[in-house]
Image (cartoon, rainbow, N blue to C red; front, top):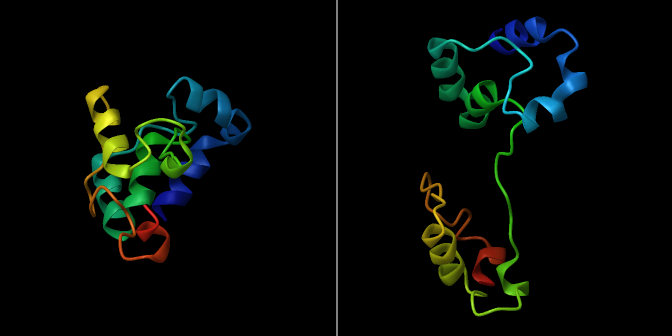
Length: 105
C-alpha cells in the first residue's frame, strides 16, 4: 500500500530516473518518516529506496583483481575508510562471510 501511494504520486517520473538520481532527487513526493519506518521493518532495502530513490545503493569491487598492494579485502577497506568513506557495518562489513565466494579473499 505504501509503495503504491508513492508510485502513484510519481506519475511518469520513472522516465527521469537517471536524471533524478544524478541530482539526488526523488521522482515521488518526499516520504513521511512513519512510512519509512513501516517499510524498513519489512525490508531495509525498501525503506532505503523510498528515501533515496534511484540513487546508487552499493558498489562491488573485485579486490583480488586489483593490480596494487590493496588486493586484500582488509587493506582495501582501510584504504576506502582512510579516504573519507564510511563502510556499512550493518550485518558486518563483509557480507556473506560464510559463503564460499567470501572465503576466496
